[in-house]
Image 1 (spheres, rainbow, N blue to C red):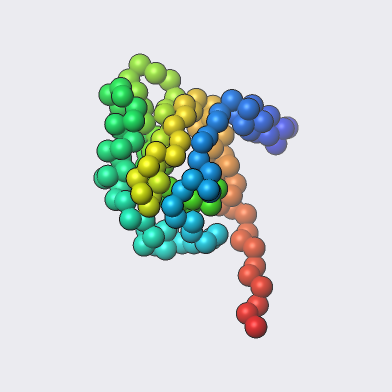
Image 2: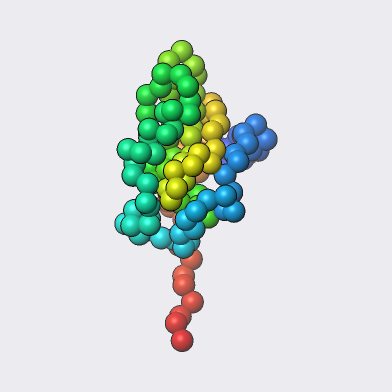
Length: 135
């Protein structure tokens, strides 16, 4: 039952949100499975600079609810969830960690945030694929 509810939420969210980020638009393409330390070594835009660009893009006073450097859809990005006073949910702004360009801005409802947290929790519990032996 929970599976169907969660999957239904994902289907609805996928139809409701649009992201303009794609691997072709970003400047840094980390290898799949790169560690946080490896991702950090690849980033040329600092968290502070990326955050400044994210906040400037929103045009409304906002506070940073969360920020992380991550590989998403083949791109190394800074992802910021920005809370705007008086609005429900958050604005998610994705900044290219290589050149500082804004890759995506989208509104995420509280339901979307909860579904994203479930996805991240499930992905964290799945075993990693074994690498083929080196020859």
